[in-house]
Length: 180
Image (cartoon, rainbow, N blue to C red; front, top):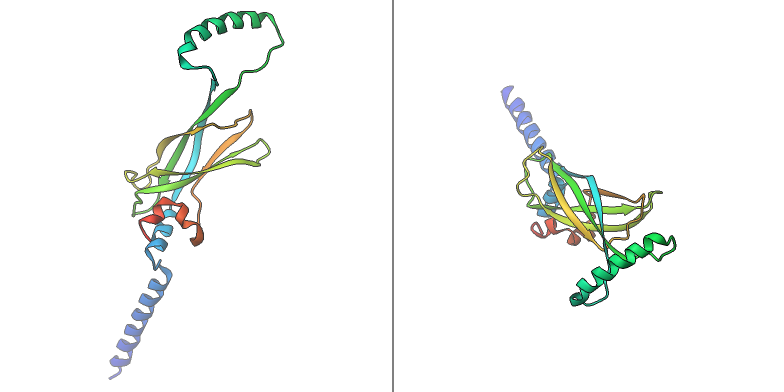
């Protein structure tokens, strides 16, 4: 008869552990995605800025313009005073992404920011990357191109996985669309 209370206490203890464990885990599919997402990380590996002159003339006149530009360039070398040519900038970013989860997400949204030398954010982008092939603990490099960037010497680029993402903003993140 003394064994019955011990068994009852053991059963109650196991049930309480089960309830406590389920209370700590995510409840909704979106919460499960958020938990898995928190095990991903992203960092900037480097960037390259490319500049191209902006031409307003029609394309068929390019050959004539090239010849004229070569002549003008030779003349400009002789002059120290000339107006800068308008350029279009694009930035090639190398981003490293990894995760430490047994569950994989098909993709992840990475926050990319551009900051001036004082650390003030100048621009911000959210970019979704297909991460379905990344295995746990492996670092994978991705390249992303930002078009029409106003880069100035000394600016920097940063990448991160935002966590947590407030529920009200989850619609801006593609990975949450599959778990809603």
